[in-house]
Amino acid sequence: MSKPIRSVRTGVVPLPSATRIRHDIEQMLAFGPRLPGHPNHARFVDWLEGRFASAGLEILADEPQTCRRWDLHACGLDLEGRPGAIRRHTPYARSRPTGPAGVRGPLAYGGRINAGDPIAPGEIVRGAIAVFDASLPAVTLESMSRGTRAPYVHLPGESREAYMTRPYRRPWLTPAFSMEELAAAGIVGLVIVLDLSSDIVAGNFSPHHSAYHPPLPALFVGREEGDLLRARARAGARAKLTLDAAWRDATVRAVTAFLPGASEELIILDTHTDGLNFVQENGGVALVQLARHFASLPQGSCLRRGLVFAGWPGHLAGDLPEARGWIDAHPDLMARAAAALTIEHLGASEWEEIPGRGYSPTGRSEFMNMAVTRGRFMDLVIEGIRSHDLRWHGVQPGPGVTVGAAFHQAGIPHMGCIAGPSYLLGTAADGHVGKLDAALAERQIAMLAGLVRAVDAVPADALRGDASLGLQVGPALRIPGVH
Image (cartoon, rainbow, N blue to C red; front, side, top):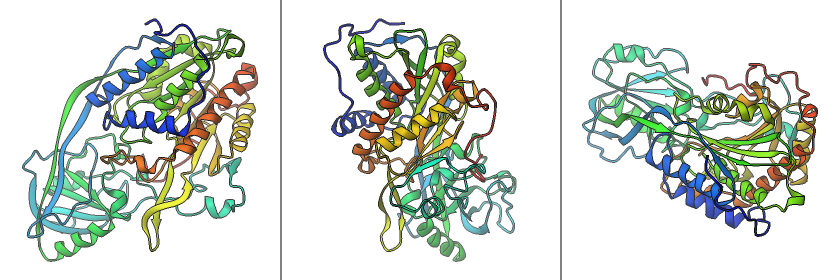
């Protein structure tokens, strides 16, 4: 473990302004997409560690882990006689690489497929590039609940029923597709047409829909490109599909920073460090800002409990233990933990397909789900949402679908906040920073800081009123068709 760089507090660091949040997020984006094991990710983890140390925190030792990373070099679909016609597309994550030469064949339309069912080749000939239509799961925010109505949704002046039952269509819901039968039949490539605008699909990198290695090179396209592909397939056109990617061995590490309190008990604040854009994942930026603030408090205003700030890797990898790996590596800290907060996806504005306007902002923030241990902890979260007027934020009984659900399952009272905007997994040159609502992130971080203070004042036994703590129960949200 390393000693803090700054040991003398020179004044209280205020909670971050919207301007400061935007500045720090832009610094994060300067590293580029931060996929686990990539040099961009390693540099960002170093950046986080340096910020924690300069705030006066002690950096604890974390053993590095090994993983396999999938580096994408080039991706495309070229139609014979129509160069550049298919510009908006995205790779099926971790699917079989083609090398720089790509694969060529006639386009063949195979109809509609369902998530989870094997894709049958039907009459598609050997050597073809197959095109299929597919749909996202038909869900609403209400229907994803496991039969438990959310105890609270902050919608002042708005109908809860209308809001919670509207169609919820997000690319992170992209399901897995089974390609083995196509590969066995000699199909050389696959294009899946999603029922979304091509502007939403383009650049969307969704590693969550499958942890396995699909046996074909495959791409996703949206509705508009799909119309063209069906027409060209009927005309017997040929195409070239390129998915130039390589697997590499890599090393990743977590960063853990410690701020002592007046007692031996701890509150853990965690997030994952890998991400693609401003929202996935800006939890580390929030942790640094909270660490700077709490580390600067004068002696009489310090928290009773110590704070642990944990940034761990692997959410976008598929072969790393994520939060559970950090938990297992730190039994000493877990034994002292009174509560844990997992922070993800702050400052997300809502963008959807709007009739007559296309893919546009709705004027709302993206729904933020806060899964929390029942009892006093849940009461404090609801109070925080109300007092900071965080509209379109809801509370769900834990463990939830956040990456921090492992803390609840390990028996630690837990809150995890997560939003799932349409661009959550989108890659873009600017990291989608134009969709950042920094003023919203400012209020969210202020609410989280207040929640830390409120939880700190509650005895540990009073936070443990949920019978599901420590049980390997399913998530509080159920996503049909998503594995």
